[in-house]
Image 1 (cartoon, helix red, strand yellow):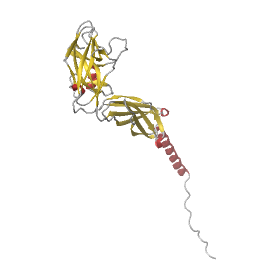
Image 2 (cartoon, one colour):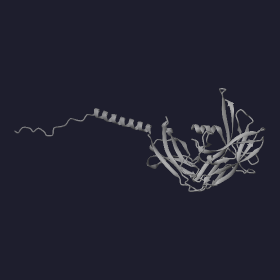
Image 3 (cartoon, one colour):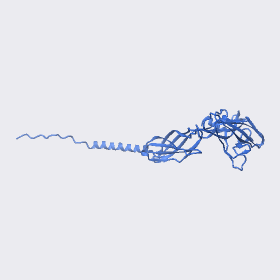
Image 4 (tube, one colour):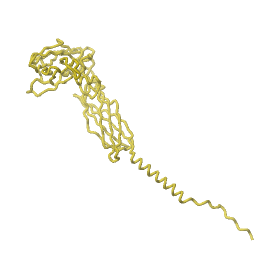
Length: 338
């Protein structure tokens, strides 16, 4: 995982809805140094939460939208939050994450505007905060992802007793689809194979398949991936079950690793990766890519080599034990005439 991904994983909690009868939805955060600083964030409206899991909107280039996030103070004292928009990206494992606070947004996060930089929410109260999304006239068509973040930054002591500033953040996801030509496309960039034989020849070996899936289109896509392994003459040796590919944002990627155990070495092995993309509107054609690896059946090779050596030894020994007779003369001597 990259440093940016590690920071986002530590500092970001993403909204998860609770049942309708529960208290205000969203993950609550507890700020270090203030055990009672707890709050939640969720998509909302001018009159309160509207049941959405995420904020999902559509707009044309140049259009301005208005939406709301509900910030609920779950403590018995007022809390002041820094509220702002930022961009989303995929971490190395394909997870959804938002940029660290120190990194400037350049996409939808830069289009999100709020009436103020900070908001104070009274104790045990929800505040529905409006925000705008101003879509640039030259915005690229397709999906843009980000979030509206609420944060509290406080000083605390680390394990060495040093003062550090910890920024605890809770966010609501924002997905915006800009009107225009769309191109939902997944691509398998690379496929790498490793084959390791077992010490027991009857157990076969283990093949590790790693492949990089990249979203090269302009719509967020998920899907399923599977691996098919064949030997000489196309003989199928193994096939994996479908593995879920996480939702990839445009430009996002994820490396998938599959392990196939008990695969007998059969010389030249071919692994073909097949990805079935999925999105909300249509069924997309599968994409495939394959590569090969040599897996020699060394136990059989050794046995055959020993057999060949044994036959050669027997042949030489036989020749030495039974030498060929000397050549006879080609003509017989005639007796003298009488």
